[in-house]
Structure formats: C-alpha cells, structure tokens
Length: 364
Length: 128
Image (cartoon, rainbow over all chains, first blue to last red; front, side, top):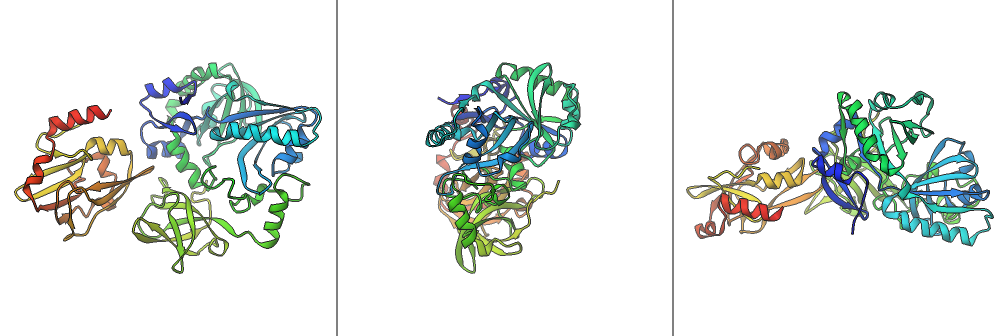
C-alpha cells in the first residue's frame, strides 16, 4: 500500500501522472517535464514534497548528539539557521543527506529523504543508545508536516501576498516561524532547484488551503504545479546529489563532492576515521559533471570509458531542458574527474563522447 | 487521443501506413503521451534489414528510454532525417511530421496480424 500526501486528490484532479517513489504515490508530471522545468527557471513552480521525512531532536544532549551523528559542524549553526549535511556509517558510506534546522540549542529538526525516513530513525536510535548524551529525545514527526517547495524568480513576490513576514529578512539557508494564509508555517529559504525560493512546513490538514491560496495569488505570475520529473532535471542542472544515485552506503561524501560539508576538524563524528584516511591517502573516485559532445542522453548506470577502459559509471543523467544537451554526473576514478577530461559514455551499443565540465551546468 | 482510420497498429503502439510494397512507421498518439516530452530519437541507416519484432530505433523522453520495434520484416528504404534534430515533433505530430522510417515489405502476410483503428482503440482503452 503506497503512502499518499494530503494533496493526492488535488494532483489527480489536475491530471498529474502519478508514480511510485520511495513508497509514496507522487506526481511525476502535470503538463510536461520540460514546461514545468522552464516555469521554475523563468517564473515559479510549486512542488508537493510532503513525502520528505522530518525527525525532531530535543534535549540538553541534542547538540553533542548531532555533532556525533552528522558530518557538518553543528556548533556553527545559529537559531533560525539551516545546514545541509549528511549522516555516515562508520565505513564512511552515507546513511542519508539532509537539512538540519536549529530552533534553539535544545531543539533541532532534520528533513530527510522520504525513502530513508524509517532507516534513518532506526540508525539515529542506535547512535543514541551507543553514546551518553543524557537528556535527549528523538521523534519521527513526518506525519505532523506537509511540505511545499515554492521555487523560482517569482517565488518571493508570490509568497509576500500571503504573509506579513518580512521575507527579505530571511537569508539563504535560514527560516522563520510565521503565518502563510493565516496558517502557522516554517518558512525556510531553501530548495533543490538552484532558484531562489522557499520551503514551507505546516500541519497537513492545511495543505489544500495553502496550495490553493498560492495558486490564487501566483497564477498571474506564471506559477505552475511541478512534479518529481522536473524536480530531478532542475537539481541535476545544479549538480545537487540525489540519494540512491550520487549518495549511498557505498559512496562517501568526499567521493560525492560533499567535502565542503565534511568538517573533519570539528571533532569526532561517525565515519570520521575512514574519511580522514581517505583524504590523506587520496580520494579514489570522484563525482564529475559531464556534458555530451556527441548526440545522446546519458542515463544512470551507463558505463563511462576513458582511453578505452571503463573508469566509472553514470549516477544520473538527462537531457537538460535549459541547455538542450545531454548532461550527467558520473562517479569515476579521480584521475578522470578533472575539468576538460574527455570521456566516452556507453549508450547501448555505441560510445558517445563527453567532456567533464565545471558545475553547475546552469548558472543562476 | 487520435486513431486515424487509414492506419494499422501494433500492440507495441506503432502505427503503419501501407502504400503498395512500402510501409511508413511511427509511434502512436498513445505512445507519445505515455512517454512525455521526447528529447532524443535514434533511427537506423537506410538499407538495413529488420525482422518483425526487432528494435529498429529508440525514442527517449526526459525520464525514459524506449525501443521502437519493426512491426513487419523489411528493408529500410527511407528515414525521417529531420526527426533527430526535432524530436519534440513526436509529441506534436506523431502521425504525420514524426513518421520514423519507411520499410519495403518482405512478407505481405505479416500485415494480416495488425490491428485496425477500432481494434487498437479498444486495445488502448483496456490498457488504461
């Protein structure tokens, strides 16, 4: 039995094509992936991402616990700030990537991938039991939140019509607890598209009200409902990793290009020993962003060749709706990840030329 | 959804227009709608022989890769050379501008196994 978000019927009424994603029935597209993609780049798009999981961490031990659990430096986080981070196994492989919200020093929230929520929570319980964090409570609060992402250059003008909160005062990767259409909402300036925009967390029973209110005030600015199909092409154009593709228990954050959030000097955390050693000895594989220089669309799991030998595989690929070229990410032996490296992608029976480029594919 | 009367259809959602000993082949309105935005098309070379049921080309949407199968056996006598440069035409004009290949029929008996428009419409309705 697939799980559904509070907007399931709204999506169906809009004619969305529904698919299974991580145990959830979700809209993959409404009017077409390319049209929805361009709406987000040029105007604004609204995504129902209520399938994402939320886990609350509370107590005097919360900060010390999160420092042990996650790879980024939680001590740098201020009240009202969000941090992109990940949890690793002792092997250095990734449990999940997530955004971490700090309400105060004893109250945090993790927003995690839908398909990983249960696994993450079990892992977090295990870590808690193995340590001595004193006063600490963990709660899976996923069912207490609907989540909408409002993304695109028009996102702020649209949201301003439904809130008294001064949105200019919410800096990138910060949040504020305000009202949207009179509904108490965590207004977070975050997203997964490369555009400016917000993610809105609120009680699920208000989902239809907020969805409809946003379209009432946003349609004239070109606000479009956007499905998971365009969510994937948008994030790929920015080289944002997707768990299950660029991140997994077999891939370390250093390999996946998350060195910038892996704070090896913050003190101990789970996976640090392996990651330290990997950094000292050289990261064996790296995630490269590549563009096709011959016609073709790269896809996940296609082999990647250089000098006639397989040097890695494609983790994600698509036809970029913005560039109208085949683009992808590939996990390759580190020697072949440098910008300008010529690669061949094994597409069915042929090998098509590609080149490693500087990410992101699309500059915003 | 359109089902032109003059065409024949396959269970793999290809259409055929039979003219003497040559058939023009493409994918149906249902096929393009199921695929979504088509972004890439791969066609065979003129002169290649295909057996009925073997893939002769590939159509890719943003999300998915689909083979296109030869509905009958035959030799490729012409391809739609404009299509690889404008794959989106498969979404806008699947039965006309987005024809894919013309095959010279090897065995006219194979045509007898194909569906007419009514039969294909029923087949599609059962799929949905």
